[in-house]
Length: 302
Ligand code: CP
Image (cartoon, rainbow, N blue to C red; front, side):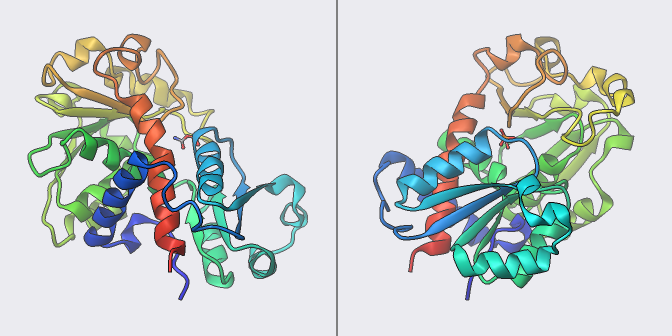
């Protein structure tokens, strides 16, 4: 039976840990699994801009022996009203897998339901699971991915936040979200995390200083996500949640700073921090490649 990667909710703790171990092995040997996708075509259907997701998938597919085909939805019949259901059924006759970046999670779910090929979520408005695999790999490499970790996400609650919460709750690691109350994660995500059997804590803290206090890792992301660019009020509301050295004074001295990129320098994070000694953002970006290759191996290896 085909397997998809639509949200981390569908993956067990054991599967996530397996993927992280495999990512580490693949990172050490770029030429490993170089025939897993031999003879396979993976299409990349993107409704939104991308640098890291698109390039890391294209390079990864190529390194695994496959061929990637970039599809801009504006040039497909979808943009003229052909249904996602019909498109999913037809694509399944030509290609062996689909990476989708789009707005609604429902579209990704439809492709998974009506298609007969593995579907990978390359970002929707509510989830960004590929990013979180790379983030966890980065923390694991630094020997931080354990129960003692004090991990704080500050800023706007978005698809990255939701997937971080889901991933951490699956692994049983506490997570703190620092944001103004009105930008809290959706109730459904909070409930999901708090119901996980691993029993980790999800802390919602509405004061930026308290949120980052004693943190080992501080993670942030853009305040205005794709499609939300006109919400100028948010920029004012989130001002005190900017990741800068004044705020990081309250974290551990050796705090690691994460950002999934692209960043709006001077908005959610200062250039000084993004380029500074505490930043691990480039390692995170690089790990998109290794984590996604591991995911592809998992989905396609016999
Ligand atoms: N972090 C991330 O998904 O980057 P892109 O938008 O460039 O793909």
